[in-house]
Amino acid sequence: MTENRVYNFSAGPSVMPEEALLEARRDLLNYKGSGMSVMEMSHRSPVFAEIFDSTQEKLRKALSVPDDYEILFLQGGATLQFAAIPMNLSCGKTADYAVTGNFSNKAAKEAEKYCTVHLAATTAPEHNRIPKQNELSLTPDAAYFYYCANNTIYGTEWQYIPETDAPLVCDMSSDILSQPVDVSRFGLIYAGAQKNMAPAGLTVVIVKKDLAGKELPFTPQVMSYKTMIETGSMLNTPPCWCIYMLGLTLDWLLERGGVTWMQELKRERAKRVYDFLDNSRFYLAHAEKDSRSDMNVTFRTNSPELDAAFVKEAAARGLVNLKGHRIAGGMRASLYNAMPMEGVDALVAFMKEFEREHV
Ligand SMILES: *Cc1c(COP(=O)(O)O)cnc(C)c1O
Image (cartoon, rainbow, N blue to C red; front, top):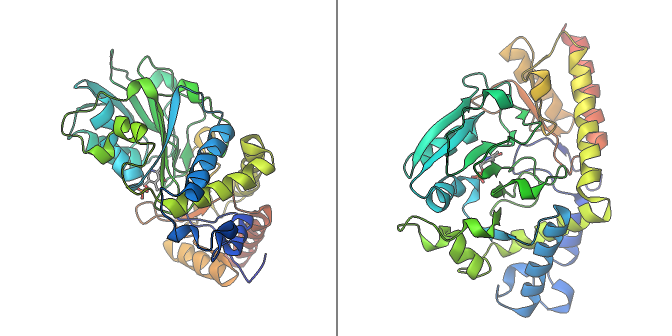
């Protein structure tokens, strides 16, 4: 690692590939002879248009997005999509929601303002597992089926794509680009960029084109997928800098083998931590084994005081942001794409040592 950087286990905003940061620094004051930073450019200038188009192409390539899907670069975070999805896709019908954590719960609550929400499954209050296909209660003729692929706070991840007649809508904020995904199985995939892609401020929406254009009449223009498709995500100023950074992240990813390579790495990172947890009687993993997230590993000791000491001592070693989310407690190690394997090994070594000192 260069320049005394720490191993950053933050759940988001989170670690970025160092190569992407270094490249951005190189071009910070003068982007490829333009004489200015990407931050200072008109979003309608040819030089930025090239950045925008090539970033979209790279994302299409990385996720093998079929041609009948549009890739949108929007603002408002994943949270704005909690409202945009029912506004654009509910068409006055019932929408099915699987609530497996905090963000899908928030999405369902927000959707209730705009359509009838049917709770297709819930894992509350523990949120330590993912429902099985045969536990899903599906509404015939539902407008869509909504779920969150990876539960960032609780550390659970869907290991399968649900089978439904209704179009699938999926929040992939915390596991997008971590594995190959069959986009054609989905009506809409979306993700806030700040977990696994880019700085905060960009939301990626991948939407099947024929689902757009049926929004409720009061839908704000800036939230209408149809309008955003027609304007090429440029109804208004897009998050230019974040789009540029996403392009650099995608260069890094594609040069090294894309999402297949990422999947191998994510499994290996998670395996190293879970294998250790499973052999320890000092730490307790939160999620059930078949529902575990490779991206966010949640665990605790048997006392909140020890948990606090763990987080503090880890930080003193340059292993930072290991405190669990305030609603879940305990610890959380977020192992996103850009987390180096050395960071994982340093974490496991520290866990061992802390256990030895405190059993
Ligand atoms: C972080 C996160 C959100 C919220 O994202 P914002 O961009 O802050 O609105 C939603 N869903 C998931 C799965 C997340 O990890």
